[in-house]
Image 1 (cartoon, rainbow, N blue to C red):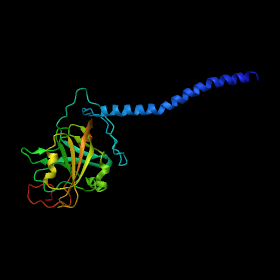
Image 2: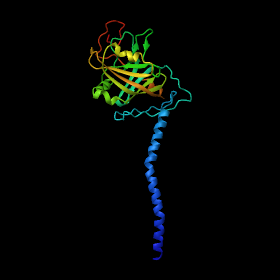
Image 3: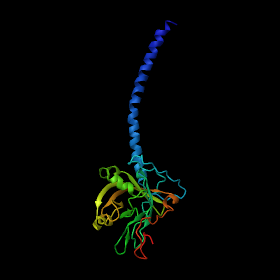
Image 4: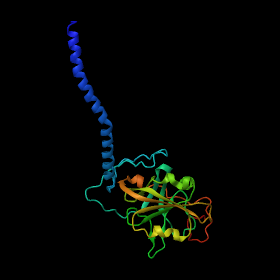
Length: 270
């Protein structure tokens, strides 16, 4: 037995050393393989994500991320579009969500003769052209323009963030606009425009010829002429449930809204 030990030891070393070297080479390849797989998944995910989709009546709602989510994160997909379905239907916006800022509001069309915007809702700007042009149809070659008060549970987080380093942290956050045909249009914020005033500030949005999202809120109390505008560009469209795309709340007259000056004015107190 003592004579066999040197022979067995030599045999073990001759076999284990090549295996060790092969194992070391394989271990060295693991980071490269992981990185390559990551790149493939990201690219594949982008191609998958940018497909328009059909609405799913039986889809399960996607949980909204908390404020701690990274601003560049994207919501998970619910379905992919059928082959060749590249058309986007003209469906009106029904809900606006900015997950990283905990903004989640129903969207309503601005009523005629509005004297004061509603509370707990975002409203669609109707451009005074002939005929009037409502800027509330995501996916079409025009802007979607939504405005709301800078108040708690409304667009106040936009104003608060804009006052920190001119809103730099908002760049890259995504915003979601749900539509009446059970779709969720996803945008990424690209610009934060502060201290905007005058009707000329609306010209760029009103004359847009590509799909854009504009969010507006006030920078001061009633009578302050300056507004905040946040601009976002489209990323893609994913399906939504009917429940997610049709919030039951439609907003309400603000408790501190001014009294109506005429019987036909809206958004004010009688």
